[in-house]
Length: 341
Length: 172
Image (cartoon, rainbow over all chains, first blue to last red; front, side, top):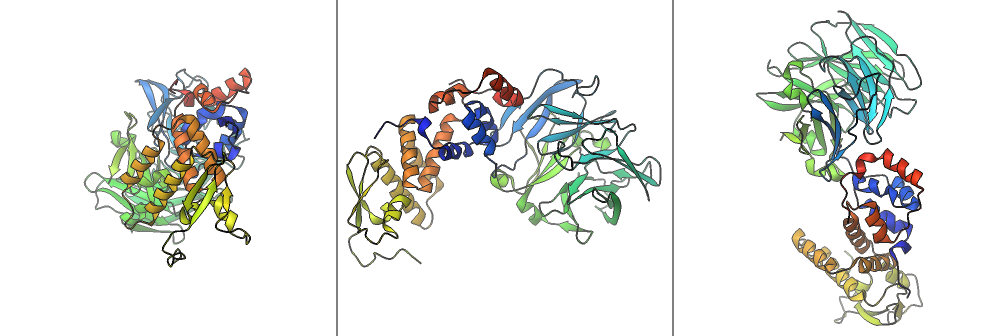
């Protein structure tokens, strides 16, 4: 029998070995050779469900060092230390994430982290930017549906320009302007709050409206195909105590809201999309998922709502975190902040 | 419900396996049947007698004792009720890999692939993955004996696309 070499290993075996590594460990091996590059690209991760955490380091007004933390390996990566100009003279410092999906983050720039004036996409894994046309006005919430390089992708921005009116702007790749929709209804310019998180399920964007006491009053839905607006009444009440509501999508496809009050801690509500009704949930619904909440809102309680909130199925490498609500803090050092349990 | 075929015989049947270098190994039938390659030699092959010698062309006799040991222990782990504590399995697996050179590991992977046994292949490829985890590209190339076939331009492009991922790898 001739002496065997590693390089004699069949392609399947190389792939088998690569599959044992997690994604962040595989990517550097793109460079080994062309065969490996193709082999690694073909691997679809079926085991990785924990989202990466992204955060900024740097001086106070210059938080432009972007770090990525892979929760599977607890390793921290630095994206780039140079200032990248992304929108005229603006860089990432001061930008606020509105939504992240598929490795892309929709960032906003505005005043004081509250309002949205410009939107742009950034992919920290590939260091790619996509600029969006100017919004013109200040918006409250924004989100997107699909990978932003896909023509079907839609970006949405919402605001209440004057009492009695809701304004929605949408943008799709390839267009150099935003489309504007105006819907009249029971909106008070000073008293109605649109949730910072806008969830995308099926083919619709969902947001929740609350009053100044942060009591959820109704759910709104914008259908991306028919470009129609629909509202569902039904409120969430938590003992008249001020609370925060974090909207995400439950793994069964319904809306999931974590309500958090300082005295009672977190509670769970599910908005059933087939019945259009709120249901109080016990911990059972959490057994199959992990919820993430942007913790920075806790530090900035005046402006209330979290920037982002989402849930992932508690399978694969996320199984260990089943039932947890995790938040990241601004001073994150590779740690997740466990809110619950 | 299965697995009581040989309960009547007092002596466990043995199957003879022949390694690549001609050395013979007498193996209890259930252990031999852990290897799909051996199993398929008999299943659906009416002419094959259980006392025939099964040739294993790609497995050197150097690794046979360790491989058979793995099958014996792991099939015992699987059968045991209650299941063995995770530490016991881990201790066996660690002892199995101890003092195995990279080259020996690779030869055993080839053997496991030839013998077509998922459990062993899974275990060994994971061990190989652990040995290259967080190593530099140069280290991994040397480990596998692979030549770099990228042009400097291609290499620079891939590096730029995934710059963050090349941070902080071990040099050796």
